[in-house]
View (cartoon, rainbow, N blue to C red):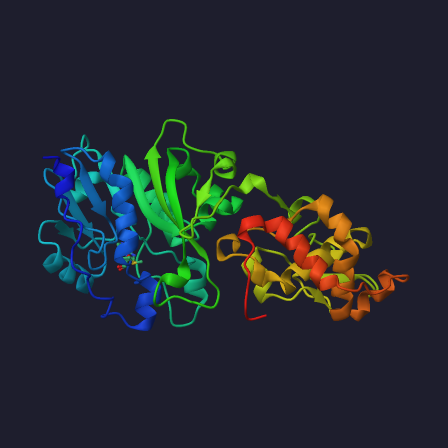
Length: 394
Ligand SMILES: C[S@@+](CC[C@H](N)C(=O)[O-])C[C@H]1O[C@@H](n2cnc3c(N)ncnc32)[C@H](O)[C@@H]1O
């Protein structure tokens, strides 16, 4: 009988995390993972396992990802002593450690031989460490080895997997680690050695305790150790698949950053107060929260070059219609189909002027377009294709 068929797949559902108070939960990222996502991880790694392999979850919580597998060693670890006590009871087949995974960077500390194929699974915490520290009561509860130091805990965990010389890594992490260039650069030492070979996008909104109001995409990612690793263009051409069975790649879209500056130009402040001002642009999720055109200068303000105003108008209108963008584009820059936009330009201007009459002086001869909203919707349906979100509540 195929030993892999014996993997204990249908284990009983472990309880939701229950022992941490709010501050500790935020600090440790103590949000545990549903069985259905754990199954996705196991479906990815099952065909790759071989006798003698080791399976490690270095931030295992109650042990949701741990499965008994014949002829393989299963190792759980968590810095949280109370969580590990639960994990010991629920996964008696596994070896358990209670160590800081971000300072425990050699296989021998987990009793893993150098020649054992190592599979790392799990859902490491993702937390912006700078915001934890900024935020009053919270402070980082543990040290991070300088070699895996990063702004984001989840990126530090990825770097720790590289240090452990994992052969395969199959974990959940925000899609933004791959699609945002600055994040991708922060995990470069991981990307230099690993390649994304399969993945599935799910919504953060499906985790019971995290924010439902602003959902962001999480990737269940399978990485394989690879001599050449991956560069950003590898990510751009990768086809991503979502839990809703939609597919896309980054390079099928054009983004606003190609046409206008998304950030203020350093050392340029307004001169006479007549400038057009626009709030810094980050991704679509940030655009939903932030303002667009501003009345008064602030340090985060972009001074809009008048000949580029149409494109800032475009972004303002995208914010207004952001409900038609799916959650999985939440970390993308504003997307644009420039050729089409130029055909629909007047409808966009008409819509923006109705909200920002102060812009009228920049479009002196402009006449309101009838049916502008319908035209904008038509444009957005072209832009997004099958990804366009029909909403009933607006
Ligand atoms: C998102 S939870 C995931 C738990 C488990 N893998 C699951 O999905 O059910 C993150 C876990 O990482 C643990 N953790 C946070 N920082 C850690 C560190 N430096 N070393 C080891 N574990 C850590 C937390 O205690 C928490 O249990």
